[in-house]
Image (cartoon, rainbow, N blue to C red; front, side, top):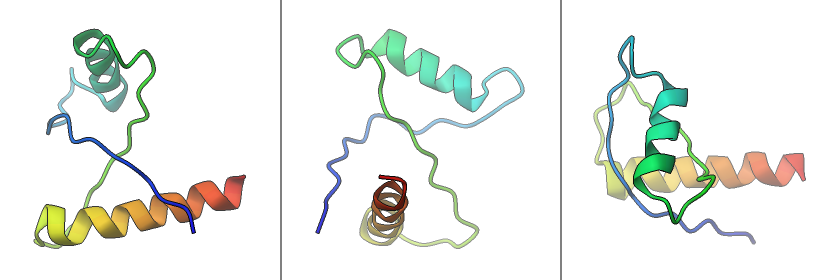
Length: 70
């Protein structure tokens, strides 16, 4: 069984001038100890608790995808 350790850094909204790529670049500038941070998007139409429900499911799906690719 594989696991995934994550650290919550911030919540950001995407706008026309703030694309996902630009958000990653701003993370690199703000957190210099993370030269190339792994960033992923968690998006849901359902209104569920983020920490208790959405993040565990998102982590499980991400680990599954990474395992398939390896």
